[in-house]
Image 1 (cartoon, rainbow, N blue to C red):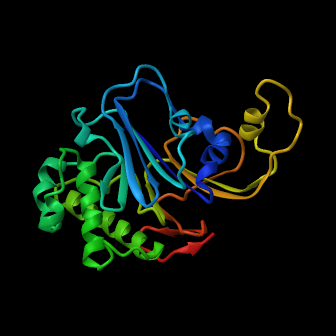
Image 2: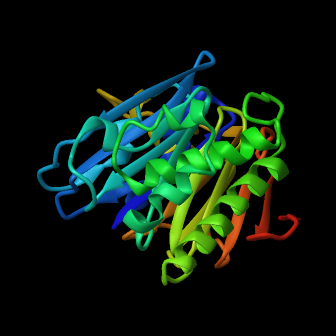
Image 3: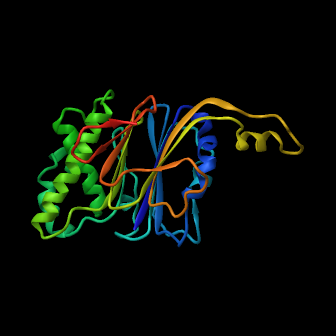
Length: 282
């Protein structure tokens, strides 16, 4: 099993403020085998990938609280391919980052057929041995086929369509090998929009529409004394998606419907659609 999360927020200086109330959902126990982060700063994609096992717990809130970014994707691996950097998620191609949780049944049997659907220039970018990296490149292939791979203004609808097509193609390939429809969580982001897919694995969504009194900022200001002022962030907004959390913590969570895709636009509006169906704004 592996787990993942993605967050978009309206102020890169306030990422930790938006995540503080959800920090329990970002803790992984059980000595994970590796983990990684992808985030965006100044238009650049940055990766922090740690392929070696972790002793004890992994606290993603502690790992991201000092980042200055408005988009971040994280992944923790609890089993799977050999622990190497190229097998460690999130994966990146140009502006796109991707995380996948779940295994593709009969992957060895369908790998060659899957690669036939991926153009050569994308196929050459596959550096590891994981099914997840192949799933990412199949997603990129559908973006390429639609002429959207390098489109900086790509819509959430077109992105969700590519992720849906990826899932349905995998279902066909796995089915031809005698397997069942895939059970997975996926997140894709290009530094402007984010889409997340849930099928067969838990996924939850948490939205922030302003903070009346930020405990993070209050604690910082109160160091060495007592500060009774309120620290509001009235205009701060964020959307957090967490796949397979051990805990959720305080209120404010809503479950992503089974077999659906949640899309987060640049203005942080969200829409949800069943896999293979048009979006419904929520």
